[in-house]
Image 1: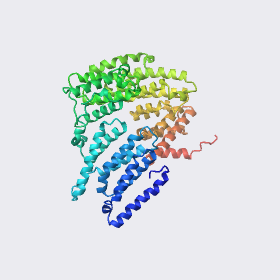
Image 2 (image 1 turned 135 degrees about the vertical axis):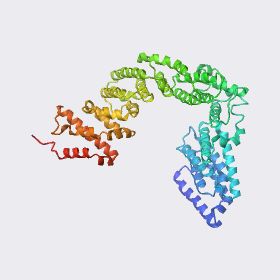
Image 3 (image 1 turned 45 degrees about the horizontal axis):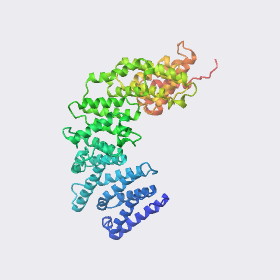
Image 4 (image 1 turned 45 degrees about the vertical axis):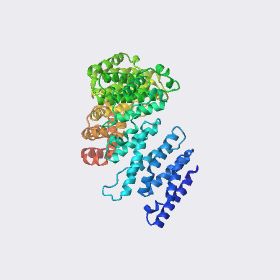
Length: 562
């Protein structure tokens, strides 16, 4: 099972099948077969593979443990659940950052499946006292170990422990707090740290302690509560405050951070721990809000995103006055006068603020953003003649344009009146840059249009739009989009308009439009119907008028020479 040649796993697996089947046949039942010392030896040896140095031995151990937890008797499995848990956790810890060829993902997946089998309580009418006692001990040992790993300095181990505890709570129909409470004493000295200051620990240990604190203080109900009247709690709170607020240069002067090349993970954990303290009274909330908002102003995208999620969680726990929000938003709005003042981090900050406080922004902001978009697209067109796709993924200007486009989808003030302006702006830019479906602007534009599918389709079926081949291609793009169901539903309600467009080119039509325009509109109407039928075949059966006019075109000799 632990050989480098993974094809040898198959005969190894078959050997285990034969051992179990033979023992079962000799002993009369699987339960009795699993009491043989041979089976314990098999379990120990397969678990030991997970502790071997090479990744392929660990992967072989994973596959072997999967066979054992799927096929062995429940009593045997309960006796070995803790051993298997430790083996899976070791793989996750030891292979992070190494070549693993999927062994880490395999270990996490198999651990979850094993817990689903072992951690579900036995039926209430189960009379087997020995089995009940064995399961109870297994559950106690497993949960105790997972609780211990909640503050692990190793990120993946910590995350796996937290997700496993949530899974166990779900299986046992309890809250995570109820599952963890009997093992609370394991964390008493760690949440918050009592014997050591946070800054006396290595950086990875600090992150583990802060993430563990965040996890335990954000459970419903809370497992632990920060109380600033307790000295150790107060010290921890102020250390987290310093980590969140201090400049990099200040932190680098401290001994424990001199060797840390990247402070972002530390700051992210500190911001999360700080946001979890929203329940602390006496001016702390205002201070936390100010620090989280300061995090939104950082130039680092990862840190900005972390500050946004923290602010979101913080606002769910407490209310902030409108005056405070206005005060922090006003300086950013003043920058919108000139697009050259708007940096990428400033654009991201505006986007995050519109998501956090959508009701605070009005239609005037949308008008300003539209003007900024127009200016930015002009600059893009001028500076990217013929080489747009090569630079679009890394260009700061493109990222700003996409972020601003995304804001229209986020605020209620962006009404349907902006549909035509935005579509016209983006389609003109795409035409100048010679890009269409691969345009980086489309995903953000589609998200906005999905807010108003009915109004969008009405615009796209107007005479002025239907004569333009580029707009027509955009219509089909929306109808075929993976999220385009609302557009298709809106188009299906426009049967009368589609019928009218198909008849434009008929002999009975008295319209004075040029032939090319009439042909383009008619062709587009037929193409729209074809696309709708492609996604929803039965729809056409109820459209008697459309079927009639399509038949008339079919019978008409379009190539007849007069």
